[in-house]
Length: 396
Image 1: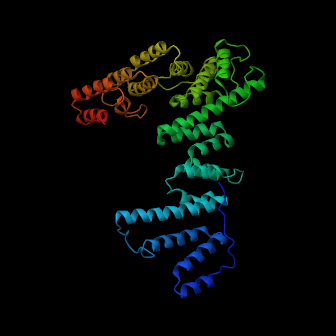
Image 2: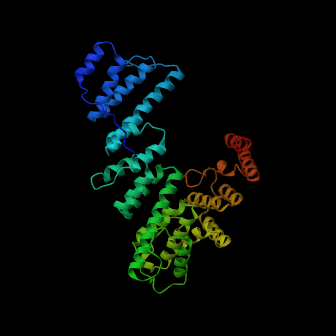
Image 3: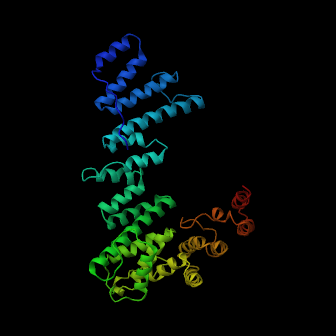
């Protein structure tokens, strides 16, 4: 961020402001007070001055006493704009000093998230402020992706996995996918670096691996290249976690990496295989089929693999989690009709409870035939609201 250009105002003091106010020049006294607080670095008081100036411009009393003041909608909107402008100026001044905690109360109300994120990214990272940056960027939601990158770089993969696992239930799917992609890309780079250092394979050490590099690595694993051996060159529990967390990713570059990681995990000795959650009981083996399908490799075989998982879960307490996982996967494969049939067959009336799969009504809105099938189902079930939603969403 470019530091705020400050005026060369000097020798402003409290007495000068008092005298100006006594002469009845309220506006000039506020201007002088603002400059005083800017140059003294007292940005919290500057914010209060800006609030006063904004209220005066709108013809409002300096302070709204008692209950929340009732304003006409247009006037309320103007006041909100004044306050947000003051927030942005104050935040910018604190950030120019590298003080994110002081800036935070003024950053939070801003709806220009791109500006807030750019401001956070602009801050220099050092040993003194790294924890503060992670706290405000990741945990408080100022810029979760930047905060997660800092966690990966400065706190390591283990901490990143733990934090992402604990935060995932509260994250929007799009953000969870972005963070999972960062984790997978970072972890894949770590594995290649370790393999190169061990002299066991020859991919380049650069993190931005191309498709060709991933293809070579996949080929080496599939051919059981003896240079890889069957012992892990990276923490096997982390490998398990990354390939599990990455199941939400659709970006082909990252899916290729996750497929490579799953293949690598599958060829490890049995002692490095850990129990998985349905439908990934044989975690690495099942993950290989999962990512293979997303890559368009042996898709029918991959679908058959998970259809067997669905059949074996029928009537058990695991049926819903398997159903939602497979339906989400089928939607991403472009098998929308099959996804809907699976949802209606295996979930009863509980589909969507776990939040694993996207909403079916949203998923089918671009396919009129599948939407009609879903609408018919809800009508037979007597589900008035769902039927209305499917039909009306389709009509727009």
